[in-house]
Length: 406
Image 1 (cartoon, rainbow, N blue to C red):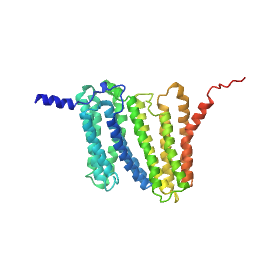
Image 2 (image 1 turned 45 degrees about the vertical axis):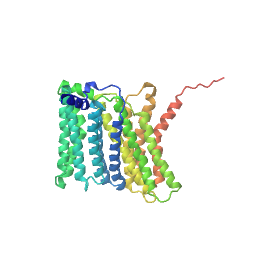
Image 3 (image 1 turned 60 degrees about the horizontal axis):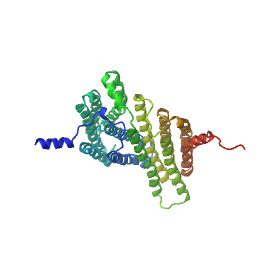
Image 4 (image 1 turned 90 degrees about the horizontal axis):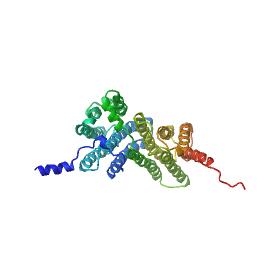
């Protein structure tokens, strides 16, 4: 019997202590599998926006994206700080994935017919997270002053979402709003706790470090979400029975927008940690929230405008498409300002970042421009690529002249 218990303990290891987190590690296949399930859920959430392009649909999209992204971030942070690739980690990760799959099933109409199923699925996911974060303090007394308030906050959110499933319809969104507000404010509230006790400050300093693996994980997640823009192009084009040169140009410009967003993010901000550890971690996290929200929203908007290329584009669709691209560019420009750059490429990054911030104005002004789908996407593609073009021109201008005057 004792031998069997020892074997079970060998399979079911406790969570890794925060102080034992490796400085260098590779993102595991388990983490990538986990991310893919979330991307399926994001695609389902974005589909609601692409199917009904309106201000109400935009509000629902933002609400649902906040839920999905915060869930992904917390699951990812747990694996980064306390996870491993053993039997226990795989079982608990798969349980989280089951809950996410259930959320995706009910995400077709999560605020109406799928409300109960989505709320209970998300509450189940939060309960798993509560257990995981609470266990870190059980097995690591040094981490307990931080894990207790953190896991307690997640538990309160879980209770609110579970209660919304059995509440009158008039209270449902209020309970959701309270649960989401607790989630979104959790990181800043935890940062405030560092002023209360020294031991909490030590744990916050350790947990708020953006390691190379976490930066890579965020970049990989972003590039997967970028695939939603390409998927939006394909979905929009496939809705037409006959292809022509105009539709081919529209598809090309839509794809160019995705490639341009990839270019400016991965050339200027991806894989780089923030300069400041504590405040920088919060800003770095929330800027990536806006980044991925804007990218997925861009994919949904592109899908809609391409599928309606033969009709007049609704003003709401123009504004939402321009707004999503503007949010994406603003978030990348913000990231460029807070991340660490090496001295040899600092100038080109700053030029690209500032150009992105300036480009937001003409991007948003396209909401006033009543043009067809082809010129609209063409202008947006040029504005998205402009920061890279300007930065490259500045780099070429500063190259030393090696020509021989003789």
